[in-house]
Length: 240
Ligand code: CAA
Image (cartoon, rainbow, N blue to C red; front, top):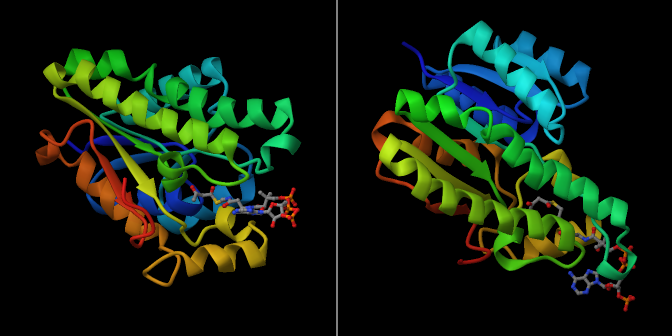
């Protein structure tokens, strides 16, 4: 039987590449999105991957959405908590709203995505959890106190879940992408982005597929002893 995989934020950017890679690996994939109906419809028509709309920051919506996915595709074996947003500002200008929005989506959203699936994984004694963190959770970033806090938090989540899940054959790992050629990075002011690329020894941004490759490895059936780890894919920009 095909493994069922849930990828939040799975219809665009890094998430879309992950959804496609897991499908190519033989998984039945459900990709969630928060708002962009057009992008989701285009993604489904191009890939055949089903999309589901809910806000990862909302626990009840996540729980209901996950129940719908499981009713349609079967019990979820693989969860990739990928959905994330930025609200960049230097700390002295950061508003409580910018803080809250990023915490709600990037950190509480990870809880909301994994928590409803976890009991079933324990019962079935199999699960693969991957959280997409960031190089900026490892090193911090000017203008990203909120985002870096959530991405560092992701590492605490997977290291704790790894210990709780191991005896149930559930693994939890993190991938820390560096700067990848997605809309999120393209939204950074040109000058700032060029300066950042200058700090990447590879001399280029990464491609979404280079992150998807890491996820595909971590969720494989025979990756069961890789648990609580962090894979960095950042073109040698930073060593954790
Ligand atoms: N280090 C040191 N100083 C910096 C700096 C940096 N990285 N960036 C800006 N500054 C300085 C500026 O030179 C400026 O100094 P002066 O006042 O002396 O001229 C001061 O800080 C204020 O800068 P701005 O006027 O540009 O401040 P702003 O309010 O307009 O916005 C910012 C600043 C929003 C943080 C902007 O610099 C920015 O967008 N930076 C990019 C942050 C970033 O890397 N985001 C990553 C997005 S992609 C992502 O998150 C994916 C992932 O996981 C990697």
